[in-house]
Length: 243
Image (cartoon, rainbow, N blue to C red; front, side, top):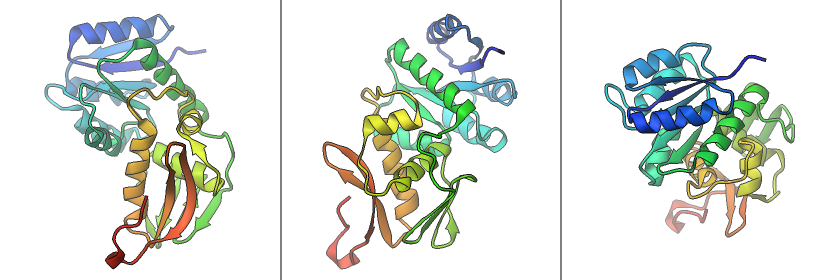
């Protein structure tokens, strides 16, 4: 079996070497790029299985690289590294095309777990509870096999993990999913640490799906998780409906 090939785009030589060393110990081929321009050229190589991408880089930053890369390699997994921990930074990263986020400082075991999970998912895709090919509720319509979604007949632009999240929830309406269950379904691991990856994806998904809809679809169950429930929006004069 061919070794996976991972591209690490990181301008801190100590960090780049530490990540590369630990990946090679997992029998993974590693290529390192120290600036954004070189990194983007390397990432376009079809032999690259996954990209570990720093946010702050010379020449071209991580957000620019992710956006550019998505135009030519929409399916290659991207893990973004950053010293920033604010939700807004994560939202921008996911919007640009990142599949996962690790905030510095991080444990190497956590990064390795995320790398392995994304490599596995990129080969097998999400098939845990095989949802029907067509799902329709309210003004939302999903074509699962094609990974396409519409609200009021307007097609949405969803990242693969965002689509997988809404399809997973909508395939079992009313079922309560914990964050751990959703992480295992979408990423193949249960440790979320402080990154709150699921919460960030839900926030982004709500903006893309619900802002233009007459309904709310993803309900928060406080202290427990999330479930899919179709709820008409309340009139604007009554204030924003509770999430």
